[in-house]
Amino acid sequence: MRLRHLLLPLFVAPLLAACVNDTASYSIDGTPEHSLSLVREQPVFWNDKVNLSLIVSRMPNCVRRHSLGSGTAKTQVEVWQVPSGAFIIRVGKRMYATETQTCEGFARLDADPVTGMGELRGVFRLNQGQLAFVPKAASGVDAGAE
Image (cartoon, rainbow, N blue to C red; front, side):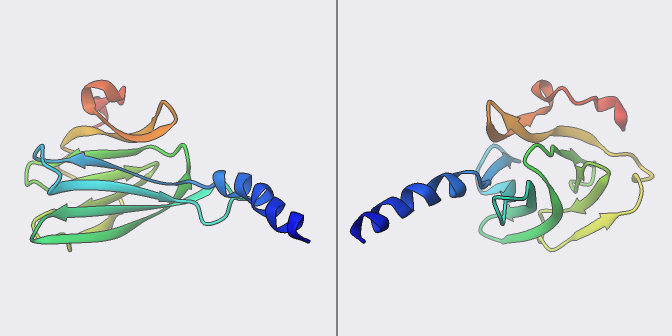
């Protein structure tokens, strides 16, 4: 009986280890107080679907968490900044607009913005097996897709 209680965690641990639950941040002004953070959460280990969320923060004034829908552990999330200071977040073919003045503005875009995507800041993606924000220069994303 005692042996069963000791072995159960050994069998469950590999199942839990397969789940994805991580985050990475893009520091907008070079400080952690003003940032965009991507959160990936895998609700169940037997499905490769992950829930993606964006945390928009400009501390101490505001912080909000917005859903970006679902993807896989390998889904890349692009961050573009338009001249007004707002951000366009592209997840595959889905696009969202957000801002950091109040952190409340968040909307799904049905088409590319008429004024263009702005400047590519970088990409959230796997880097050596870990979720990371990779700046534009190192991201390998074609900035000509504006």
